[in-house]
Image 1 (tube, rainbow, N blue to C red):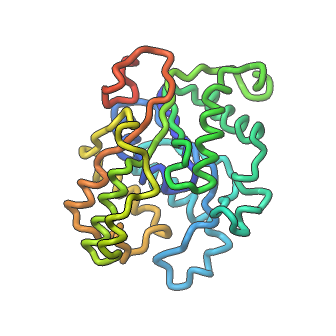
Image 2: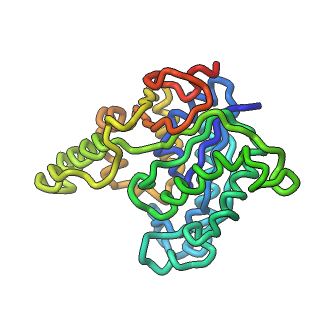
Length: 280
């Protein structure tokens, strides 16, 4: 059954970036699948009295959190199994098993198999900067965009090895609006986490709003989105600004999810806030 395949880097990215959108289409009866590149082994560990006790099994913990979150969102979950790459220049980024070091064609082929297995009409990956420059996020952009086209290419990815070719109709890049980054800094300043000078500085992260094509209002699904975010308990400290901000500010900041429509094989009004516009 065609539907939506969302490609993400780590457990928790699916809920933070587009949890409301995933709920929306799941509730509408679409097949919705989240494919996550890594197991998130290098993430921070919060809300544990002895974080070191789960450091060696953090990947298992985060995959369980991912399954819990996807259950809340009502979507299926697949993990490609690469190791978390950590940040640029750090030792984890040199690990040969990490996603950043993966062979480009091998990783693309691994995702092509999942695309051909689920045969979605719509796919999402990340913008070229991966939102904030994390190497795994950048690779989701590279591998995800290549696999979108590769899924239909039986020359590069023959059917006997990767499954029958499948042509996806539409590709979106999930992105973080620059204006939301500005608002986040303002909220942090109001809560006393940063000073006014830092709050006023132009953010490095996020896409200019004029370059975003699709703004989806997910207020109706916000409660489930936030429940899914909190299912990733090791990743969000109980006393963090993100978790303790006033409810009204939280809803205002995270009730819209944004995408760049990159490619579509069918015509649709680019201003329509619907990934499936013209397909239903």
